[in-house]
Image 1 (cartoon, helix red, strand yellow):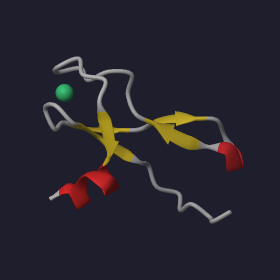
Image 2 (cartoon, rainbow, N blue to C red):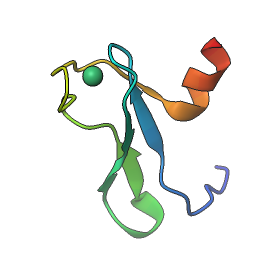
Image 3 (cartoon, rainbow, N blue to C red):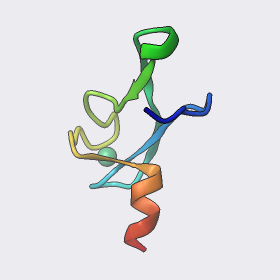
Image 4 (cartoon, rainbow, N blue to C red):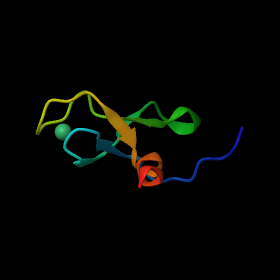
Amino acid sequence: MSHVPERPSEFVCQDCHLIYAGNVVGSGENRRYDPPNHCAACHSENFVALSEYSHMG
Ligand SMILES: [Zn+2]
């Protein structure tokens, strides 16, 4: 199990490319970040992590 730095994950809407901060889920060692339920701008549910999005060019 690798240690995850204390840094909010960000997610990108795949349809309109808005960036959202992840929602904190859990606490302590179980804390993680989930994407929004849907995009506030275009109502898409398709999100990709910003770190992965950057690999797409
Ligand atoms: Zn969107």
